[in-house]
Length: 80
Image (cartoon, rainbow, N blue to C red; front, side, top):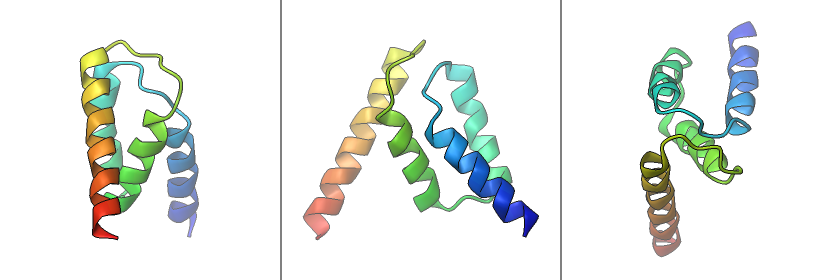
């Protein structure tokens, strides 16, 4: 029960944390794994973060992520 509360709190925090540093972004995969997040939960976090104001150190990686999320949205729309 406590784990789910911690997990939901961290997910909420991550959704409000913009991309800042490439090294921090690599650590997110470890955090996602430790929290046993589903692919859908990870996508929700990444989508929410892509909509935040830009505080980027790594423009190329962030633009790549934005393109990925945009293509995922298009795929979902086409499947509907």
